[in-house]
Amino acid sequence: MMMDANPKTAAQPATQGMNVPTLQLKGIVQSYPEGEGRLEILTGADFTLMPGETVGLVAPSGTGKSTLLHVAGLLEKPDAGEISVCGKACAHLDDQARTEIRRSDIGFVYQFHHLLPEFTAVENLVVPQMISGLPRKEARERSLALLGYLKLDHRAEHLPSELSGGERQRVAIARAVANAPRLLLADEPTGNLDPKTSHYVYDALLALVRGTGLAALIATHNVEIAARMDRRITLVDGKIVPMD
Ligand code: ADP
Ligand code: MG
Image (tube, rainbow, N blue to C red; front, top):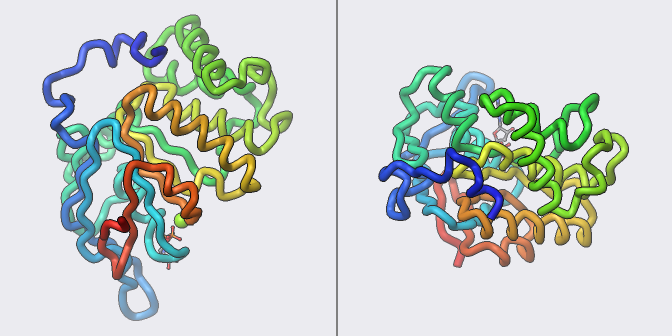
């Protein structure tokens, strides 16, 4: 499969074996200032995601799904708790070390695509790979292969503004995995799409995740889509509980 052509994934350190969680959260606490006090969002969230697993995070709006994903994606530092990504403890790392882990091990897909508007679809995939040190030619080949896998070959040279909503989200998914991460975090990635397009985008997303052995935590409030994941979790009073 194309992702294995990447030299980075070919040689895996022993710590990235199948028995090491791709993501582990322990006792995550996160609150935000609210008036005189604090708004408690996560109150001791525990979660383990194994390699190759797809997990749906299904909870009502405002319960902390995005907060949890931002903490797991090292975009936000929690008030307390432990986070490890592929066996590496991350909570106490400095910003630069966190950025490096984010760049090499984590892919993020947001509800809004966040593609660079002045770059074509393929260039949007090339840029993060070049930032990670891949030569342009190789980055471009990998990008085209990835777009082909998502059935976007014919869209490679188009600007985001020339793509449909579903195509833009598929490019965003391709970009998120362009650096061959271990962990894919997606925050309501089809929240802006109609149900039919949404299912089509998930077909692509899940095929990619399962074809590459990535682990994925995907927030959605669509239970039908969540049913397509290996298992489902929800947030109750700031803690993660299984749904099945
Ligand atoms: P969800 O993604 O499930 O809709 P969020 O994680 O976005 O929930 O938000 C959970 C709660 O935390 C909401 O009440 C939201 O307003 C609040 N919140 C999120 N981020 C911040 C922030 N940076 N500052 C203050 N409050 C925030
Ligand atoms: Mg959210």
